[in-house]
Image (tube, rainbow, N blue to C red; front, side):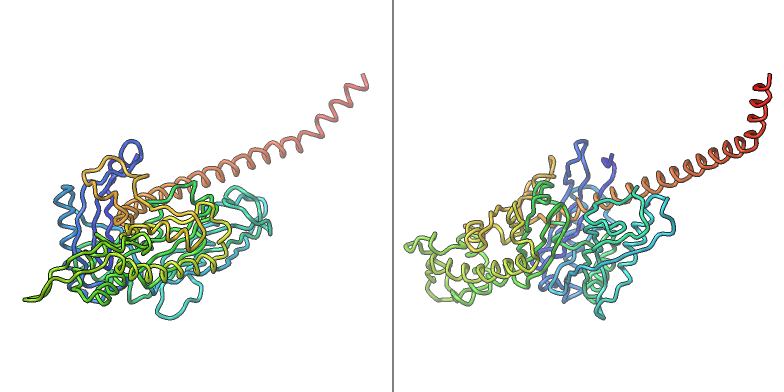
Length: 435
């Protein structure tokens, strides 16, 4: 069990930097021991633009989480996002030496590691290589080829790359804050662990994580990730639109969006008015809730159109039986679910990170705003599980191969005895026959 293991997730977002300390309870659920957050002023659209401000915010969030949990934090699982993230599908193959021996975990690892040597654009690095379907001796659609016999092993891989400079800047910020990075994880993958069920991934689902600077898209089908994309718009652009459209201060625009914002203008009452305090010696400003909704709806339609384009590009538009799951801070806008359903024709729901959460000290971790933060902790546990599984598989495969060799040696030993004694047995039989 993993009850004694502690994992820390660090979400370096555009609006906030959040650190979450968690462990698994006896039921396998995530128990959050502590959480800290700080305003993110050095990150724009998922990319670090000011090292010092980001380091200061990381230190503040980590110290808060450390005090609340009583854990001395040294190692973290960090999320990465931004417009520089690219995904593509690549085909790989290896030829094995023996037809008789079973395909082992070492063969799978050799095939996967080959993908890290593919040619990618200069200034980029591979952060994830995820197998989709395996092919053994031209027999396709295989999920797990370990134990099968075959000479040629092939697979399609979902390869995700990130800008080297963006990775280096994140590494620099985390190291300067006195921490080490255990895993660097694509944020929509982390969010998917927190808000999606296995049934949804099996049936086909599109996860849309609306953050402050970006909107992340991840499409799953048959329990395999098929497509990822990052759209360079998020909640901050809506705040900016309100600021310009209503001629108010930025913090006032943010409050208008979160308290009175609606994604569908028809749902807003034309008679509802909000009064905003005026600037120095100026009268209060009156803003119509319906006009506010018009501004929000226009930008949200643009974001949803971009999401729909990614769904069509992926080729899985007609295979998403579970529809769309919307999460992130931007998902809390009123009527957003209905707007997604109206524009895409797919079922939609708001994703809360409740499914994998147990009893926690921190209640507001259950908000969609913290889906990525919770997911980073879960992905840390998943990486631990995968390492243990790989170790066990390698150990078992070595044990099996040793047993197989021993069996073969035993069979050969008895064959040699039979060959040597066959003549004697026949001679004895012939002698008996004469009598």
